[in-house]
Amino acid sequence: MATNPSAACRSCRYFDDHKLNGAAAQGDEGLCRFNPPVSQPEPQGHGLWPVVSAQDWCGHFSPEMMAGE
Ligand code: SF4
Image (cartoon, rainbow, N blue to C red; front, side, top):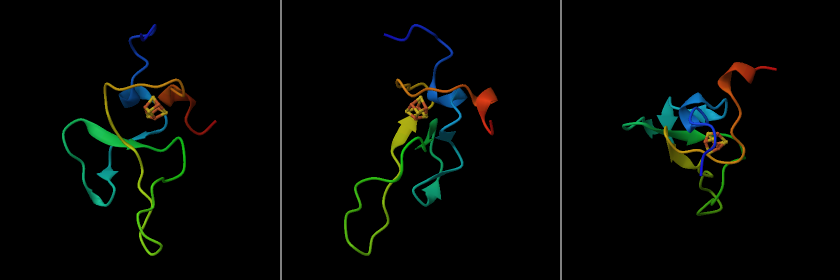
């Protein structure tokens, strides 16, 4: 249960809506950059950033206004 309705990925400093794992952004989805890439499928493959929706949220939410601080 979200206690703060503004605590959504769209307003989180770690949300990146510019591209999805090398492809164009789709809908309201974006990448969560809180952690390093995960699930590297092959030794020569690239790790993947978790894809989240703008209205998703998690316990690591941090307001965008804090970016760069
Ligand atoms: S999943 Fe959590 S840390 Fe990642 S963008 Fe959404 S609220 Fe931020």
